[in-house]
Image (tube, rainbow, N blue to C red; front, side):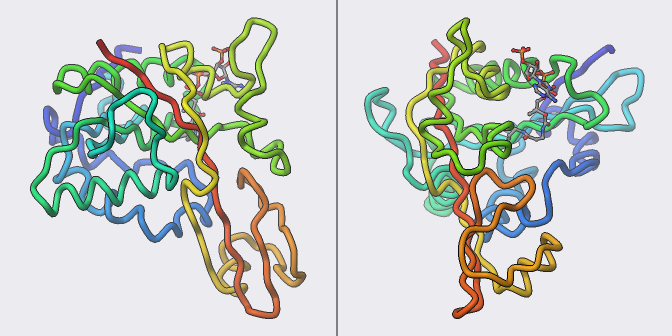
Length: 249
Ligand SMILES: CC(C)(COP(=O)(O)OP(=O)(O)OC[C@H]1O[C@@H](n2cnc3c(N)ncnc32)[C@H](O)[C@@H]1OP(=O)(O)O)[C@@H](O)C(=O)NCCC(=O)NCCS
């Protein structure tokens, strides 16, 4: 494949391809914070939105990568936001409203077209995101990583899961492994990186599950159980993440 990885700023004519595919289950699209970024990422932060296409088939999206500058303590010993992904988007939005430029870049998402997965494209996209942040003058890229095999172990606390290593010392989780191999360092976890709350009728519609018993519910694709409360007619999902810090200099 003759791959072009560019930004929405450099190649605005490719922007309509974004959204060509969605890798997320319906319940993941209900986060109340994410529209603050996604509603206008392409116009507000176009230099931090990566678009990958095959030059021989420029009509389809191969992969996308979303990132955003935000203001935070760049001391490598300082904890990264306890509110994970949601807090990055909230802070980036507040920075923008205040006319402030963030001092760190945070990755928000890298997605590869389903039929092209397993061919190494995720490392290419992460390398491009690192290079893009460095070229834009940033010394650090952080990532509230959604470990992509955690849903196979929903009952395991995220800190224990993040600590699972293979015999070669790399993380067991494939997506965390890509980050560490690229030079990232695991810098902690957040247990509330994204919060999704809904009535039981909403959760039934999002998942097709009954949500008729109080207690934890395992939802396909969810990294931890969803907490269901039939007496009060709501269920809440607190998605965890693993913070990874990439120094770029
Ligand atoms: C996560 C994702 C970006 C990985 O992209 P990819 O191009 O398929 O991954 P790669 O081919 O680069 O492989 C990366 C690692 O995952 C492993 N891997 C790939 N597919 C796998 C699978 N189905 N099961 C287990 N491991 C897998 C690879 O072996 C590789 O590890 P290794 O280099 O140590 O062997 C892709 O699956 C995706 O878009 N998922 C949906 C969105 C998402 O979850 N993004 C990440 C959070 S934002």
